[in-house]
Amino acid sequence: DTAVSQTPKYLVTQMGNDKSIKCEQNLGHDTMYWYKQDSKKFLKIMFSYNNKELIINETVPNRFSPKSPDKAHLNLHINSLELGDSAVYFCASSRGPNNEQFFGPGTRLTVL
Amino acid sequence: QKEVEQNSGPLSVPEGAIASLNCTYSDRGSQSFFWYRQYSGKSPELIMSIYSNGDKEDGRFTAQLNKASQYVSLLIRDSQPSDSATYLCAVNIEGGYSTLTFGKGTMLLVSP
Image (cartoon, rainbow over all chains, first blue to last red; front, side, top):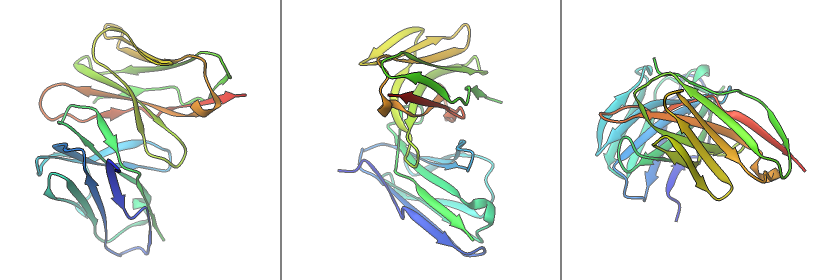
């Protein structure tokens, strides 16, 4: 009965590779988010989708491309991974764009 | 640019004491305020939300908001060692598609 789930939990890969992280929520929420938490633990918004439409796109390299096939899913694809991409990536969802957000367990990405 | 400031800590309190966590924000248009708790290696967990000036109590937790002073706080009564975590303050502006801006968090250590 997990509310917001992400896969994989851990991802270790080489520089230059392409990888994807998947997120699913079963809360019936309309809005989903991707956050990045760096080594200093600072949590920063990357993208937000509302009803499958991109509504927030912060200053993120073009190598990062989100995709929302339906309201319950938001995936993140990363091309040409770099060392600086190493971080924990959290998916979150909320009833609407300005409501309380609920976070998934996170995906720890390590780029070697 | 929206900013949310928190003392990084650590804030050390003995078991049974009141822990007081503080947060200031820069944008006077902010309308929604949230406190999240994050244990090491885990995802942020919503503890409290507050939208209007004054106090809001939920069990051992009390959130306090003063919009005139642009200040929001979280009090934890009867602190327990299990409360030891990083507490994140998050602020949102109502209307449109705005982002939830997080502070860098305050680490709380409750000693037995």
